Image (cartoon, rainbow, N blue to C red; front, side, top):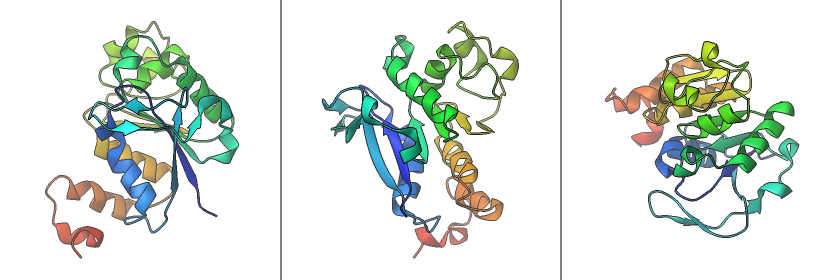
Length: 200
């Protein structure tokens, strides 16, 4: 049965931050397993990404049942920095409470911080001060790494889309450590022959 990744879509979401992850999930070119990608909007109205892509949500937040999916992905956006995004943060809470992984990068971590989802979980973001500005209580659990996995939560900063993808693929059990090293290496000028899917 095909697994499903729900992807939050909202105005100015940073499409490049989750691009690596979505490509590997959807195509299965690296993992050998293709996933269905379902976009989730707060309403059914189209939104425009930061890169200018117009996206029409497949479903709306209120119709999403976490146990029907296998992952929730949330990218950064100006929306998070404006204190918005509560509907998606609450959706993340529902996923985590159901034991379904949530992957959040950049500004989305601020939304999770405001929702209290980082207070008791190890996490990362752009910088610690960015999250402290939300008033959250999770400062002691902040880890200064490119990407961090704590149970069902995957977080990363805005400069780490590749590490974000690697961490999520690892948490989902889609590749072993050797393959993940090869995957990350490709994007850091490693020998491309270590990633056959990109050279053949």
